[in-house]
Image (tube, rainbow, N blue to C red; front, side, top):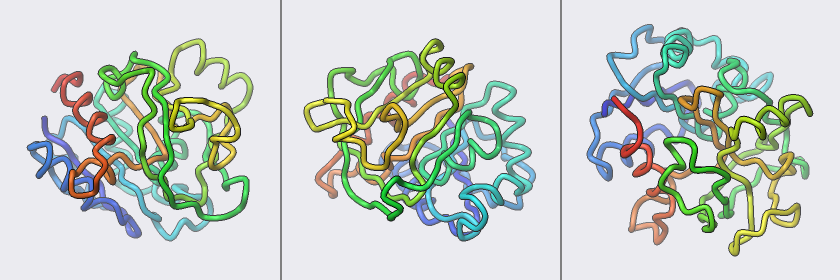
Length: 230
């Protein structure tokens, strides 16, 4: 599968993502610049973490206007795969490819630490091969990670099985005591109705290398490779 990793001004996890996909997972990777108007034939687009355009206005609000996002939207609407991690998730909501919004953390502070997330469904390429009874240790690093959506959208996400991950304890308990940012319903990641656009706040690319003593994130990439069709 051919992946494209987009770099915006202020991205800082793009090279981490390239390393995981290219070196650890053995995939072909194209580095895409935000001013590009060509996805260079990639099958799967990744919007990485960081602080695109310094997070001025709202996080992702300026990045959604970059030339490449027009192509990313077309790609997604044509059934192409897209993953947004952290700032990438914020960009996807701003661009309308995913519903809801990412608001300031409820403590109004930047949070950078290891958390646990529990898969909420196997009905997506990124979670299909994950253990629904396991809590995966995946780091977060964000100031605006509190997922919010209207009651109508939340009901739709539930009815359509679009919630990918929820914050949990190490034992898999999903409750507010194990919610690092105040996200509604402990939501850490969602997908679109067509299940080809995925967004999540935690960083699986930061826990995919054995040198980091945590490879829980690798399971997500393995699931993608096994279940996405190029």
